[in-house]
Image (cartoon, rainbow, N blue to C red; front, side):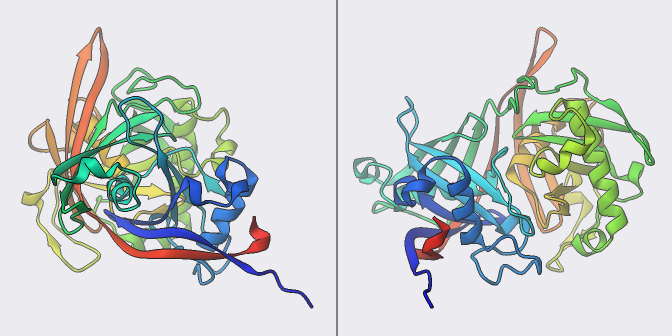
Length: 383
């Protein structure tokens, strides 16, 4: 009886914000996985441990949630004025599927530290220390992200926060165009069979996101994961809304196609500030936030706040008349978001030119650190 040997691939396991992922340098991947396609997807699925019908990821590096089943491929950039190219893959827990349609803002903070620690950033830039700007070309969406990393003695200071700037974060997904509001409206009436007509703001910034009011779908906006993820009827309702919003945004042609792109668009429901208790038991006071937001990702309520959705929130909150702007209290230029795990502050710099809204950039601070570095093992037959 023969057995497939294991191969070992250099990798770093990192946390960025509220997400975790396995990071690779492109040059370290098995040769067949260095280019997009079936071999790459098969390799990453095996690394994470998907598909797992038991949703535990026992046989892989994944954490069995959308926020902890992520992969990142980084390489030195040949693009002018950029340091690294970054490609993000969201691995489905229960299916043989890697979604390359979006990006992970939380892990973008970790990309800066990874690029420094793995030698992708030239050492001469790190000698003086201070703040080092790592300019990332986010290949999934074709946008620039700047991560400002504090450096001492040539090493990223992972116990400090990193500042992120998402430059011109309006995205063109699947050739639908690069307008912040794909329908040209600050809010739409979204007809959803079996649910009704919902006021919705559809935004292409950070990641395509559908925003609806929590009260319009029977929620207060302060729900936690156990309330929704254990309710099949609620999850089915949210997926139905997401599918119809995706059609209205031009991301898909028919609602049935939504199942093939679970990463985008996101669906979020918002409400004005309210007191609530976070997943850790921390009391969040209404006076410390400007609105509450809950986000559905990969078919489940997310346990925190994705930076890419925060970009969409910060952009939309700066504009009066959007569903987000109507829910938010406080300064239009900066908004404090209450999410299941705590709070996040994001700023949006927007302009209206010739009747069209333009997002110059969004800004936030995020933490990141190395959890493990070494090698991942996969059966040789994987690649």
